[in-house]
Length: 226
Image (cartoon, rainbow, N blue to C red; front, side, top):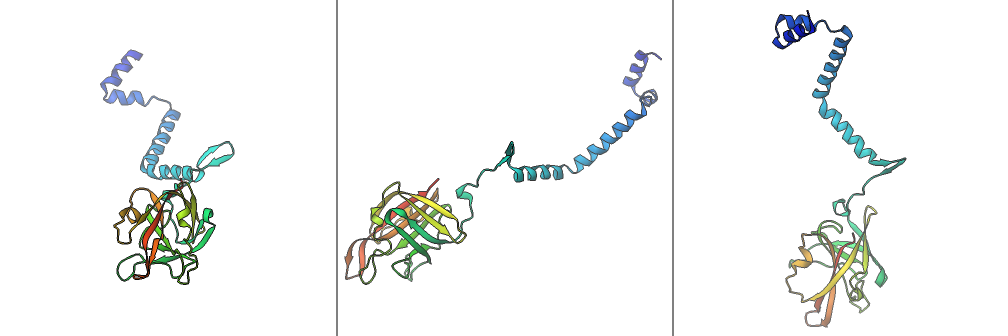
């Protein structure tokens, strides 16, 4: 049978085709069987192989020579702990942080003394998305300066830092400040949903002995130091 005849039989199919294909060398058939078995195993377990490769890539990172480079986790995605200390170098402040909630009339509570600050625990933790808020006294009952006595000297660009109970430090940059009346509606202080902020609050204005309170509230707005 000529090569031309064999070709026509393959195209037509049938018994002649089977007899022709069996003439291939046995070693070639063996290789075909091995490849077929490998493909069956790979296709049935492809998710496993892909998972292994991905996990190796995550563990090893991107390598260049003998060094391994891994991208640091973005600050806004970290899991932040409870704030324990605040540092404001410009006013030489390093103070402990208390957790405070609401007063009986629904206002933000204040720290129990004049040397600590109070973090508003119902809100975000400092470093998390949203507006975290920390308050501090302007002075004490005996007239001594309070922890935030010099808060009004902060200006845009000044940096302050929070340390949490995991030892993680997060810095913020002052964006600006504003003085409010005690009864003002201030959603920009507590309810900013875009970005990561930490706002500092203390008393301002003049002392009113009739209501035993200051006439203003000073807010210093801080944004996450990227």
